Image (cartoon, rainbow, N blue to C red; front, top):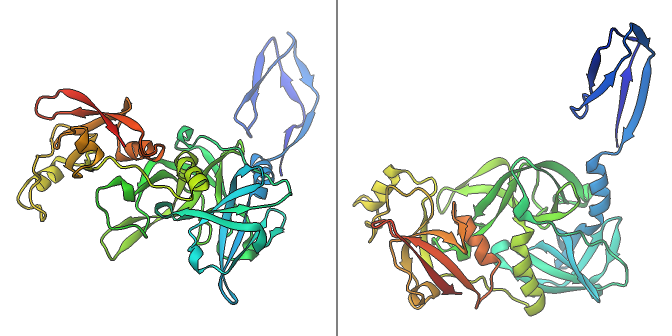
Length: 388
């Protein structure tokens, strides 16, 4: 609860037809007042206002949807995870949590909100999506549980306030709240359990970053905007891979999977028990941020993998440069040429590679997409329709 008191103390003297403003230092607004055309004294004014903090209201509303998942792998050996309810149907509720190897699990328990307890016979494993390192469980209960409204993570902007809820590692800090801002959007991340980087978007996930502190054990926790909408699920602390054996940690950044990118995979898992991300069948190079020096290196004999079959255009600074095609893949079947630059997908400008990944994550096998390709030599563009 936030309390503030606005006081106009002593007397305020004004004179001769002057209008005046005074500033509310709590929200930055200015309040207008006018005086009569004579010198007069305004009596002391005291205004006391108690305003409930937005963070308090949001936490009280949404925290019942976030809880702790106990996973029993062997006698007296539990894994403690965070989970967030995100969907319901006629006989239960669906919870996203950290990746679970169900074949080794002996049992589950879940505690929600104000310590509502669910035992193993009420909980079932639905499925997992390994690239996200997340799983889905179902809780069957007659109780009415809170299901948060899903917000559109695509609408998030850098600097926007967010709240994160999770349990970092142990129950003595159950459902802690941290606050921060959206620090990056359209970010791409390669989870540590994925195969080595292959230039294939199949193995990468996209989302946004936040500066709200998150810690081990909070993957699966909810990230909410100040309207109380669930906009994302905590993935893990952000790191940048430097080589196959080392990495560095970027302080104060955590990676969050946006709900727009979660809905298709996990709705498929709920309906079919599995999800396979559609692929275009291309290998690509993101031109965003690539310097001409780097292009010269990649185009030249110093490249340890040998020069590229088609030189990277030095006068194109965004888009996705196609370096190869999967034999028999969707792009090859559509006649997509190597050495061209993908500039648009379904009419949307591709500024960075995550734009493409987002479209694929919201698609399913059999869907059609339209890409626009720039020929670097002629500067002409052509559209290609690809069936995923």
